[in-house]
Image 1 (cartoon, rainbow over the protein chains, first blue to last red):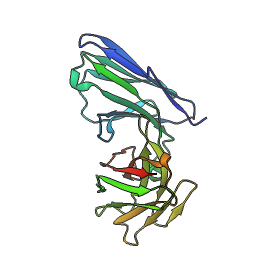
Image 2 (cartoon, rainbow over the protein chains, first blue to last red):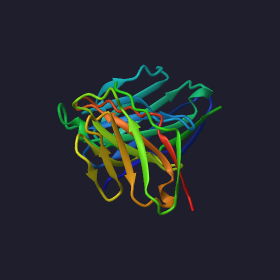
Image 3 (tube, rainbow over the protein chains, first blue to last red):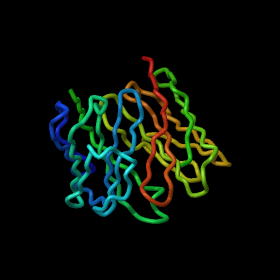
Image 4 (cartoon, rainbow over the protein chains, first blue to last red):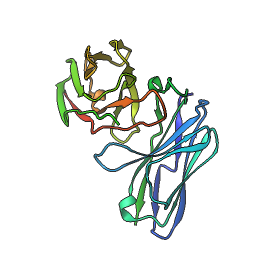
Length: 118
Length: 110
């Protein structure tokens, strides 16, 4: 099973709402990623978890709060978002082979959650 | 982080070979060259990767210049299903940084 699943597929929320995006993989991968993708732009890295610890935060505003409850699950909690946060949010995973071996790792991406903030 | 430069868009006729170029003049000795593609309304998917030698798989071939400052993704016979944005990415051999470049939008003409 090489699938990364994301729920929900679509989400509409107001600026005062709190919502969460969910990502799941069962490939035994130990690195999980969140990306944000605006229309006709490449994905932008937001967060990386390695062995359930946050290892990279690309200066993302605090209204985005990631969580990795276990090695298979990744959540992105959303609160007080702005309309400009409307985008496709992609989750990915990779093995996390460690120092000296990361270069050859493949990332597996989910289909994304399309978020609209009103 | 080392950057990649790709043409914004390319066209190909169906069933013809396609050569998608990528420049990465600041590549370091341990950076791997990865190619991913993103079909419309989907997440990116892995295509191929390499370090120094040319690579082949069922999807494509990767030709890497001897000085590693450029590479070319080769689709041997383009089909309509190959219409996508193709991203050339340099992946370090340490850490989990993974940064997309601007990509090339490939149009396949029937």
